[in-house]
Image 1 (cartoon, helix red, strand yellow):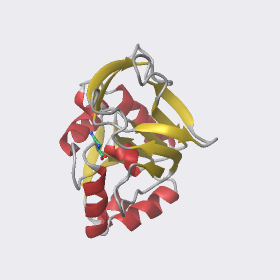
Image 2: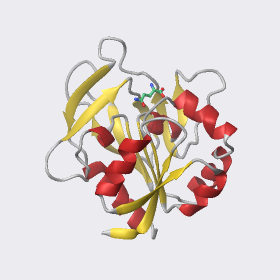
Image 3: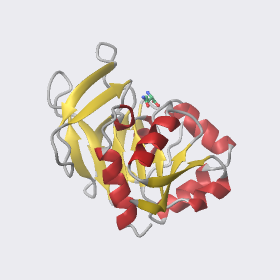
Length: 203
Ligand code: GLN
């Protein structure tokens, strides 16, 4: 148990509750982060799945964007799933006009990348650093990672079908991102990996 750690969930929009439940199942305290002051009260933060354009707008409206960016720059561990992955990308393809990310991971992410036929699908994925068999990847209007810089570790790729080889899980230092939604499967291994990262960062 790590009840000393407080892991935040950015709670502007998206599947906040699912992440809170997954983190609680990993034995950490959680805190919903909505206000600027709350950014300083967490040892790590999850950026949920949802809609990145809305999340971006709300992050600016609630004035939480700049304090969060500042903490990420200083090494705050973060895990983004789906829209959260988009928020952690340094570069986007198919962003809407004026859309901004928090950035942090040296990667280009393509929004809604899988196209209409396979807008939503599930697939088993082998994820580097996660033992005990494949992780079920649930993809919902998901992005993929178009390219990564040299400091980014590719943890998982689509293994079958037309999108085979596309990167869907990455890590750079204290930042973790997945195109899919581990928060809705009941398998908490990805969250446990993130909690270990938070603990390792000295949280
Ligand atoms: N398509 C959404 C976006 O661009 C992400 C979808 C999701 O998080 N399930 O933000």
